[in-house]
Each structure stands twice: as C-alpha cells, then as structure tokens.
Amino acid sequence: DTAVSQTPKYLVTQMGNDKSIKCEQNLGHDTMYWYKQDSKKFLKIMFSYNNKELIINETVPNRFSPKSPDKAHLNLHINSLELGDSAVYFCASSQDPGDGYTFGSGTRLTVV
Amino acid sequence: KQEVTQIPAALSVPEGENLVLNCSFTDSAIYNLQWFRQDPGKGLTSLLLIQSSQREQTSGRLNASLDKSSGRSTLYIAASQPGDSATYLCAVPSSGNTPLVFGKGTRLSVIA
Image (cartoon, rainbow over all chains, first blue to last red; front, side, top):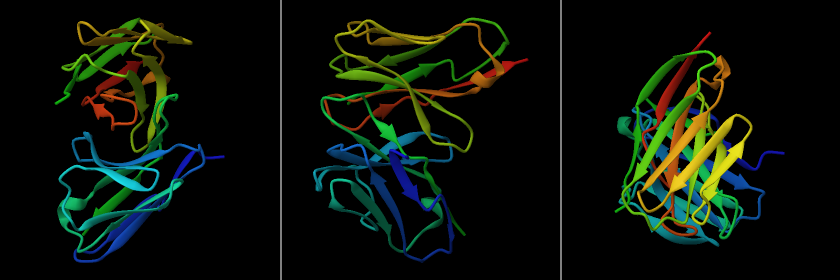
C-alpha cells in the first residue's frame, strides 16, 4: 500500500500544452510538498501546503498552480509548458511531530 | 538561509570497505536531519532520521551521527556492497513542517 503516490509516472508533452500531476498520501500527514529535481539532480522546494492551505511558494512561475482539495491530496497544474520545465517532480508529505518526510516515486516530465 | 553541503560529490570504493559520507549545514537550528537514498531514475528512500536531541541513529549497516553545534552529520556504511551503489542525500528542515533543504548528494559506486 503506497504511502505517497503520484500519477502519472512519465509525461511527455509538447511545448505550450497544459498538464497536471496528481499526488495522494495515505499517511494522515498534515503537510504536503512539491519538489523539482533538475537535470543536475538537485532537489528544490516549489510549494508547501498545510491542511489545504498554501504555506510556501518558492518564486515559482505562476504557470505552476498547486491545488489541494483535501489534506490527503496535492495536485500540480502547469500551463503553457516550456522546455525548461522538463524535470522530475516529487511529491512529499510530513507530520509534526513525526517520523520525517515521505516522498513519492516522482513524475518525469519531458517537454518537446 | 539554510544551505547543505555534501562531500564528496562522488565516491568509488571496492566491495567490503567501510565508508563515510559527510554532510554540513549552515544554520544549526535544525529540527532533525534525514538521510535518503536515490537509485537512478527512482524516488527517494528514507534511510535514517535523527532528531535534533539525538546524537546518532543506526539501521543495519548504516549509522548516522549528528553534531548540531558544528553543523555536521556523517553517514557511515559498514562492509559496503554493490547494492549500496546509489546517490545519498542529506536534508534538513529548519523547523517542524518547513520544507527540507537538500544537499547535492554523494554518488556512491561500490565495485564488486
């Protein structure tokens, strides 16, 4: 039973398209995150949500819009995709106090 | 702003060696520190979580230590095996549910 699950695992799309990535966690955590791992494998925070509320937005272009319908789900919608958006996007969750952060398996987005 | 540095960036060792991976962070006011493993093309697997009040944690052949005052952590891997080959990431949040700040990782290759 996967703790943090993301769909799809792979996404190949053309420039200018709009796409969404979905994330669900069954750990009962209050906080969820989106991270981006670039071509140099560096992981950087994009957004953080706590109980459906946006807590952190790390100067991400407004083409990226996260949505949290409930505390178990955090989706990421990307408008007008650009070549530079190609990366692996990871969803994660945590609980305070708790046992650390749990990551999903990632979504590899390729924009062509 | 918290910054995390991992040294070395890459390491290649023969099977059976004991090895140490280093992680340093600039702001010692951390809540905990987490070590992850990432296999090529895969997600992040949590290896060890050390709370700020702890000095070390052990899991099997892995031992992680934490020295908050000096801003350092080490991950010790005993009797390395080819299956240990992966990228090892160190990460810290500044408080309970703030996003993790990652180092750039140490890419480990264990040669049979």
